[in-house]
Length: 324
Length: 204
Image (cartoon, rainbow over all chains, first blue to last red; front, side):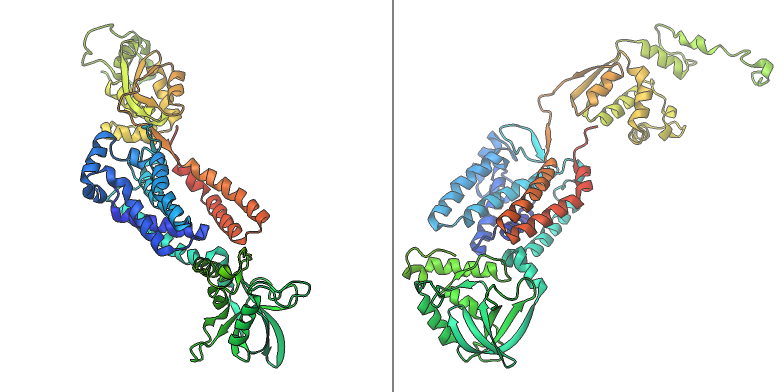
């Protein structure tokens, strides 16, 4: 039998890989759900850790259906996802925990399929599903091959964790680096556009990844919450020294000739300029997020989702406010 | 003298080779009975049944070779891998596994012709066809507790095809994140393709 610790590590590495691909939020509760569901299938074996705690149920399952049969099947995977995952989706209004249930439980089946014994994946059929097909490439529980398997799972987890935070595109933008310049904000045009004086020249700067309601766009009405967003930017940035971070990958200017940049403030007044102002606009519900790829896209989307849930700013004041 | 190697003595006292082609029909093998005599006598016996475990074509041939060797129908020296030596059972098994299927089939062909082979389970892939081609009657028992395996390795190839499709879908959706992910996945799967092929459960 593959050890419980092996299942836990493999399940978490699968979860990091999934969250890297699917851009799911709420990492910590989801990781706990993944951990719990990853050991559930072994409840059909009384000598296992969950089987020991659910002894009566475990002995009954072991007697009637056997180990690595019903609880290790696709049928059980679907049932557990429906029974545990769908209610959490309905209660929290977010699919993350349902996905976590599926990934945690599914990872156990996949890990056992890679073990020498295989699993009855298509139960009630008694055929044993194995991956890979050759016996000599599968994991022998308790042997060195299981230790190698755990080591590989840990490496996968370490590789995918940063990607799960920033996304594949975000990682690419971060690897590409960014140019940094310091300047003084001379004028605030609206919530997401400012004019910054750099080396004696004033240039318009558009904040990357945020979109505040319009206030000065010709031919367009003033957007709901637009004036408040504009007032906040004016209050926070006017005549302030800022650090502009301009990504090296992608366009450095938009269609209107504005420099695309992240604006950092020296919030603690310790000369560090590490406070990202773009995030403030989203956290306070003054801006929506944009859809295109950039280094902080996933982080911004998480903040926007939290602001939306809290109902701050335009998310409560502007009924019918759309995401983009 | 029995050591006459002169051309005049060629085949002088030795019984002609054909003489041994008429083995005694019954009775225990005498001490002087040669390997070939025993072979021909047993091969002639229609009642001989080989019982082998389930497996691939190679496994079936190896077990049949071993069964024939135990019955003295198969001389280990005939196998190239045995290098002309007498071997024990483990050595025979090793030599059989190292030999090509073509070589084993060539040696087993005359022995199996018309014989009954009982398989304790099912022969995978072309195992049954191969034995039938050699003239054996094959009976697969399909035991109650026989384990049947489903190799899920080909799912990798389906994933590779999906990853390739997703690259084009992501171009249509203008999703850079998905494009990078599908590209990495496809490159990985394409690069590791030879390894994935080796991971598959052997059929032959």
